[in-house]
Length: 297
Image 1: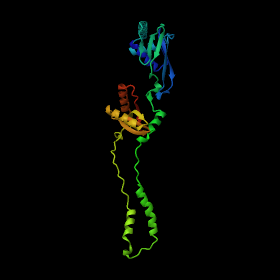
Image 2: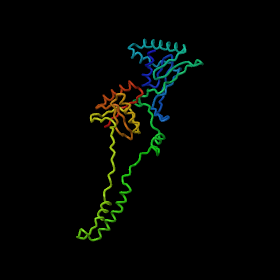
Image 3: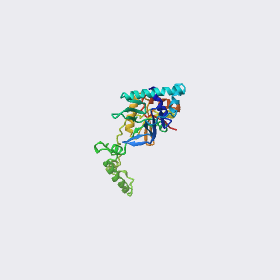
Image 4: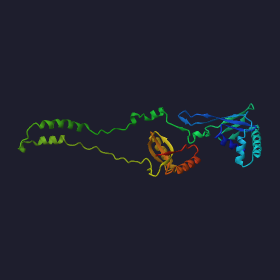
């Protein structure tokens, strides 16, 4: 039943694919939706109609082209394919078609079609994948800081220093109205000492030096296209994801805030072709990674 893979290829370009003398797969547009903080991109809803058995030529012609045979030989192969499908179904087995769904008979001997979940058969949604976002309620919870977790704020101006300033300034203004005598001996040493003590500068506050940890590697000027592995509003989540990708061996970078989100890049490239090749390589290893290309210009 290797020719069943042709159904997926045809569904990408057509709304209805009929297997002669068996049935037809009909698709309908399924718009994007949001469910439980998950974004689901547009897709195609697939149904099976066992009354669509006539030969419209689409499936046979495509099979002939793929196998490099003529139309008559392709028609014979389709008949053999239908016989094989019916044999497996009658034996109580499930017939699975990749990204399309499963066919089987239920307890009442009715032919049932169970469509596949999260298919990627809508070309208009190419490059889009499902992702989970932070809800408004969770965002409010993350911003709530309990009193015991709040950092202590260091007081720069101490009360003692502030009192000295408040007392010293008016005293200096008052002394300016009295004439200064030429005889220096008449100036009491105690007056100068008091004034000097009041105007003495406060001890400078100690500055605690903290080690600055770089967020990520520097982005070279030649890099224009980046493979984005994730975007986060929370900087903590972004750093956690960045460290995870660095541990996995990626040359991950934090591109900083872009449209209010921290973009975590898994690599930078000077041209689109190199970035596209890397994106396909990552998707081949992790189909659900949802990586996409960002052009910084």
